Amino acid sequence: MVKINPEFDGSIRERIASTLVAIIDRIEEFPSKHSDEIIKKYIHNYYEKKKPIKHSFSNDLLDFLKRDVILKTIDVNKEYFESTSQKVMDDLVAFLIDFFTDEFSKYRDIIEVSDDEYIKIGFKNLITSLNQIKSSPNSMMKLEKWLMEQLKNDWNLIKTIWNDFKEENITTTEYLKLVIEILDEGLFYNIVDSFLEK
Image (cartoon, rainbow, N blue to C red; front, side):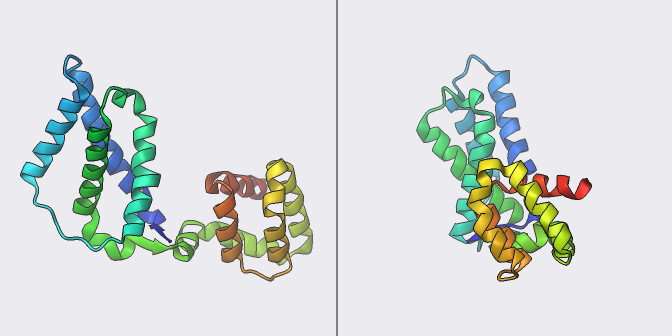
């Protein structure tokens, strides 16, 4: 599976969000017009000015972009799209994917990263800290206790992975990759980060 390089993630999300905000501003500016009409016109105007470009992003990355960036951004602003038809919403999503490929195609080789690269780039500091903790049995015991307290019932979901990590059967990168497949990566990062700040 591929993901967006964490170093580009913020700017990509910001560009998608700012484009949606521009559409939302138009919807608010013309409350008497149906949102379908406003969105269709916005999309039409964009395509009139831009020629479709050929890109080499994988379908995996575009699916990730759709699921984890575009649909989540739309969901946060769903009250503006309540009266929008499903057809126009589908067109909006397709437009935002085209917008992304137009804006970022020249960075394709550094935007599209594997799961392992994503972990190594996005969790570089956490990997370093966990490797330092791993060198001290006492620190590992304290972190294990902290994770149990913070994760409560979710601890059982990662206990086996933790034991493999503790016994050095898997690397720190493999450990993080497996854990964030099970738990929300932001939640886990914050829990470990709060341990490090103690």
